[in-house]
Image (tube, rainbow, N blue to C red; front, side, top):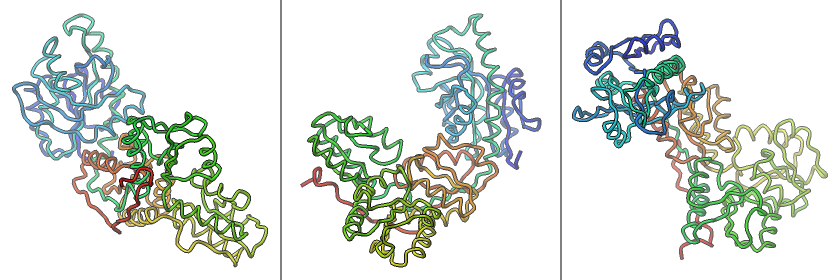
Length: 504
């Protein structure tokens, strides 16, 4: 265990025994006794404890729950006339992920505390408030925890519509108790991460102008023409963006052949090869091109260099949609160079007629090593008049380097297939700071945060800003009471929408 000061409350003796089987010997487990009165008396002795957790069994309030399901409270409320402000548990998404990793069925939502066991109409009334589960202790145990990390995890025993006062309830209680040892290790992981004290946000972060333009293109197309609007490939590489647009009626396909005749088609921000444009024209597909203008610049340079008779060396990653589109501008005249080793081995027809281009989402230091080799091997090498790596990629990497220098660990919000997000992780790790790429806060592993005090947070250029807000909110549930913005540059770039959807 680390230096985190915490206690785990378990109301009944059978609950405490079950939890103890899943806890290390030195875990601070305290049995409180059942009911709010006993809970209130016990809680009074822990007013100075840094972090408080409650675990045990509970009654389910909604029919979607099953005996043995786990409810991680996002907030704990008092029922009825007891009133009082709810106690919020911001770290619930991370605790839930730790439990799901153990194969448990987990729900997150409000837990309500009642003075007595509830059944029938009272259960229905509490369910109508949005609560998922009910107990008789949690709100009393956590009532004085304002400003401190709190956690509440309950295993569902009885569930509607089954009546509570029936012999079968005893079997459901026994089944719920068997789950308690499995939730204990996740609470230990939470406790060991409650040393967090500060979050440092790298700025700039999240959406860039090209991503905003691409997303707005699809949104405007849906607003003007109605669904479905077909998009070749992902409009940008982010799972949340894709899911949001799918809910509005966007249909994402890998190939043009999947698009019905005459259907409105959008090309993604990553660009396409001329052959794809030609295929769309042959099929008579009305096209809106959402290619990022900075990617279009690289395509233009590829045509210009190849038109001079040069061999074009494209520094990039195989299989990425951007590189595939650029390679397609001059098949046979553009070669992909991924690594320093590739640069050492590549052969060209005429060493005096060689140019290079760069995928826009690469890391600056990653490209520098490859370029050093190419310049040594091909002294006549020419390149673009301005840097191909986009301003947003460069800015986000520069900001994160400075944040990583003061952080114990870095969380990068972005999807696995996002090149610029993956580069942020690599840049951080090359500087010696552990970094993790996560789609959202639900994917944050508490074990990464054990014993840390300062957590750096950023987001790739295709990740929505709300993901950062949600992550920061969850980190406050680990004790991070300071959130600081570290800004290295202010971005004011804006790209106009494609002419097909531009407002006159």
